[in-house]
Length: 340
Ligand code: SF4
Image (cartoon, helix red, strand yellow):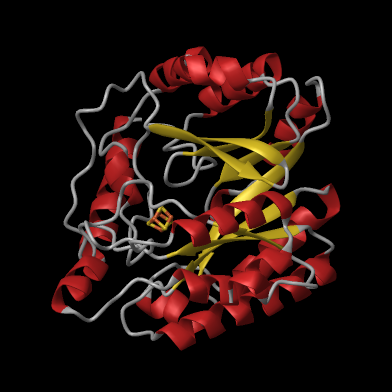
């Protein structure tokens, strides 16, 4: 195990170096406590979003991403992750809202299904605790890169969730980030070909699991605001076709890009070569999903990872944020139309 862990840690180091990351990991965090959690409202109802504290994302090389800086640079064993699960379900705000939680999203700022970062024992324990505590749960969402998805493992998880009090759908959540192939793979370094993605969706198709894809609006410095809107629109059209072709329900989670510290986006921002997207352009891009075969959610949090002055939320935009939150809860596109 020690050798395997060192190999994964070496991969993380190489990935970070390749993409010029200068952040450090959060190695002083108590390994028995989760990294972060927050509540969101969505069309499914109240969402509990949890980031477990584990070894960082093995890929670690996506251009503007500093999510690994919130987690660990060393292996976190299964018993510590189980202690985090106990920590989560004993938090007063989770206890107070547990009967209202309709969806849980499980993240480790990497891939939950990569067993070298998130233990399988802990994953089984999590399913048991979810069944014991979240009696109104409708959706169980798992963030992962597609290469770690094993259909047999999903079937096992879906079977376990079916033993809970209510019917719970499994949602697989992956990062797509940009539609343009060159930007996605050569500039952003996502490592996701359309071919791999389509084989992955095909493998989900017979089981009724749903899919959520993260997109970033304006994810790289050499992209102007108009090109950023167009890229999202093309992504919406593509995923709408994928949803029809494979009969998989697809949600797009559109994240406006913020300037993440310790990345090349920070350097470009400081040189004056990058500005985060404008919320009004985000509304314009999201509106393209109206009457398409995908649903849309606009990510409105920078998870406190943005450089000062590098957020996509500018002074005086509270009303736009409130309206976008209302859109997220209702899926009513008239709200976005009225913003433009
Ligand atoms: S975007 Fe996701 S896959 Fe890429 S480095 Fe960040 S956490 Fe890892």
